[in-house]
Image (tube, one colour):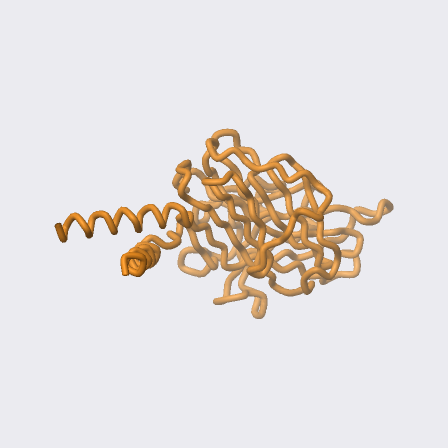
Length: 264
């Protein structure tokens, strides 16, 4: 009976102390208007050019609602990563009892013949607060490959066709501040990084949580030309703080002790 009471209390605490939304957006009006994303909703440009990320409303392109964020990778002036990110209005999280999860739906559309000269990808990154270093990132490529990155700069790729191309896929990164472990998800399924050929170093929880980024990469696949690009779409972006199971259990037992004291 005592075990049943404790389980019930833990369940009740878990229900009341479930994931808390830090930020969530599907880029709809009136909060967002079509045009440059920079400066809207707390997003600041760290991309080249600064107007690379745009809010659009082309019919049929949004996952939900009518608006979305898009990037035309042909407009990128470098072949590296470009992103928009939430600024320091995001609360800094340093406690050991949280898991920070960032997720977004992304699609990479191969709309032009010239786009085959590039590999384009879209996804989400987590960065720490103290150093601005990457905690972990995940992105989907135009050919359906999935790439994950860790805090040590190591990358691993699940090959072409891992997910359906030219369609929305959900990507997510979790930073577990209790264990200092990063986890990666594609369409709700955790990726097993053990076979990706990289050393998956964990992150330093003491550095806290800084921001979560919308993230694109453009790389040439044809050395004779630099033309072409893909359209990368983003929708339904969210950042949540999730109490770790250990924290919920501790809270539950604390509640049990308090209940016993009240009965006494």
